[in-house]
Length: 274
Image: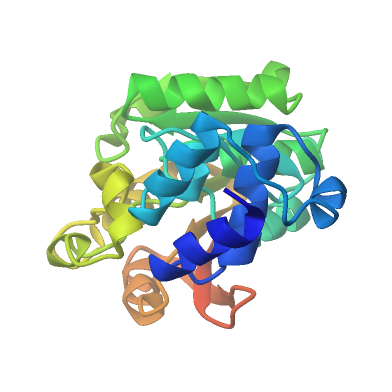
């Protein structure tokens, strides 16, 4: 297939950014770079791996899983069907954490997935250390690989625990910052999401009947493990600012909501009222 033929196949399948995705697939499976591709757009590429990947993507299998990696902040992450795919919206969470965590801060990342939130924060803040928590061993194995590949493996520990059962925190002491991008999609909406999302781990998307299960537990129970001036930074859905703010207020926290780069409510910043 030529570059133009790949673009056309993806476009027929409803892939909006067909040109960018065709470039990524060609460069990955044919060992060329983007500069070289500019002069080879009419060349025939016969890689069987490439052809299979194009068809897989045309059937709406996520590009990130086909490639096996994805960029987030200034780092590159291995991704598998055991991890959510890192998204640009979540970079706002890392940006705020990097700016607000005190010198030599200690942070914990709940529902860490690929580890991108904790790892990119540590990469930007070499004075800090972290613990990353997830329920699934296979997910944590990917996160551990990502920590090593991005040069922060010596400053992060991984813990296989259920975030909805926070008693494990008693053994960890206190933290300057609690970070989380928890599941926050309403259960009844998970099956209605874009087809690509059906390949991502459902447990990392499903936030319960109203999408707020994890916020109730994290905000209601984890505050006891913050230092005196500690805070929480939680990713939220675009329509959850009021609900999360109400949960925070009842738990004794102020809640300031920050928008992502697309202008949607995205990060709740929680500090104690007393």
